[in-house]
Structure formats: structure tokens, C-alpha cells
Image 1 (spheres, rainbow, N blue to C red):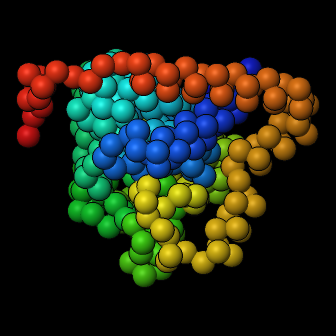
Image 2: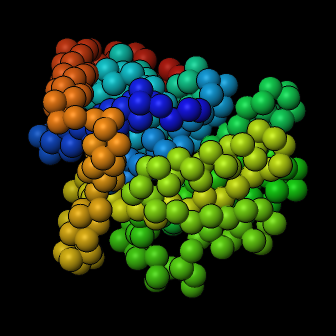
Length: 319
């Protein structure tokens, strides 16, 4: 993918869309319009956009319970996403999946997932399918630092390494597994170090720097498409919200939160685009207005949609 002016502005617009979607979802949840659990992605936008912006239509993505940003980066329909959060039948899963289970196979988006670490074997399987069919596709799995302790990580990295599967494992290390700081659940500083146990590259990058994430992803995707096997990318980042909406985050020091907000991924990227003469203040305001309208239309679509009929309660539901 060539990072020309249009591509850079598209990445910036996508990051703003994710932020606006998440902040709006937070308000709607607080107002009681969105039922169930909601886990927001604000602060981590550079990871999803840095990786997904360079994927091809035939590639696959396995997401997490914090998956709105991944879906928006992949081109998900904002109206259908909000409808799903509202529990309406016009949503991606006919209103039965909610925030944690949005999926669109036509986009290669295998789904967000409410089970920690469950996307890892899904991505390994999708990568195997790509290799078996020799279609040049790759599979990307996003997961958190807490999921990196699960057996599914080690089994997936092991088999992907042995079979040289075209997989990219992207750890979004936001420092907390629910309320547990990484230093209290792992005796390592860099999760990328775990790649050495499987004989594959492991890189740790600034997850708030979208260009750094893009470059690491570019190398990993190239390696996967060339048949050289998987890569583990650790993106060090920070979620602005609690583990879930309603989490008071009493476990996080205020100075830590402020430190990360001073390194906001969107503001960093905006500054760089301005320095590159790619973005003017007028363009920025126009893009932000366009994004706000997109989000407003999505919310109105969801509000005006119908709930599924009770007779469809068990239709399309598997367990």
C-alpha cells in the first residue's frame, strides 16, 4: 500500500470515526439506550488503523470483545453497528449479538469475541485456509495482554510457526487485564519476547504511533504473503475508558492516565500530517464535521429501527 496523501487522510478520518463512535456509544450506554456490556476502544485507534488499512479484500480478521475499532477500520457499516448495539433487527447480528459479537464474513471479519483469547485459533485456522487455497491471503488476530497468558496463544503461535501460516498476531498491550496491571500478571516487560519460543519474529512498537504500527504491520504482512510464516507484533497502548462501561477504574493512578492522554494517537497523527503539509486546520474541521454527521445518521438509523420479534428469539442462535 502506498502511503500517499489520500491514504494518510483516510487513515486519519478512520481514527476520528472510531473515537467519535466510541464516545457516542459511551453516552448512549450511560443514557440507558444501549443494553448489555460495552467495552470501548478509545485511545487504541492507531493499532487497528495501522494494521487493517493495508489489508486486502481477501484477508481475514479475528477481533476481541473490544472490537468496534477493528470493524470500523475494515469498512463496517456504522448504521448496522449502532443498530446491533441497540439490539435492533437491522443490526449486523439481527440485534442478538450486541457489542461483543459483531461480525461480517463478507468483509473477512470473523467476529468480535466475548471469550478472551478465543480469536487466536480462529485466525490460525483462517491462515491455514489461505495457505491451503494458495490465494495469497493473510489472517490477522488482535488480542490483549491478558489474552497473551491463555493457552490459545501458545497453541496458535506454535502451529502457525510449524506450518509457516500467513498469520499476524497483534497484541494490543493496554497494560491492564481487566484491572490487573501487566507487571502483576507477567514476569516480562515485552510480550513480543514470547515469539522467540516459537522461532518467529517478535517486535514491540509504540501502539499510539500509527506510522510505527503501519511499518511493523507492513513487514509482517509482506513476510506472511511471501510464505515465510507468522509474526507477533506487540503494540504498547492505553485504553482511556475502563475495562467496561461502568468500571470506575480506581486501580489506575491519575498521573498514568494523564501521561497517556498527552500521547493521544489522534493528536500525534494530526500534528505529523500538519507538519507534512497533508492536513490544514480547515480540512481537519471539515473531516470532523463529516464524521459527526456519519455517527449522527448511524444513531438515528438505530433508534428508528425495530426490535426483532419474540418469535425469532432462538433463530440463528447457536451454542
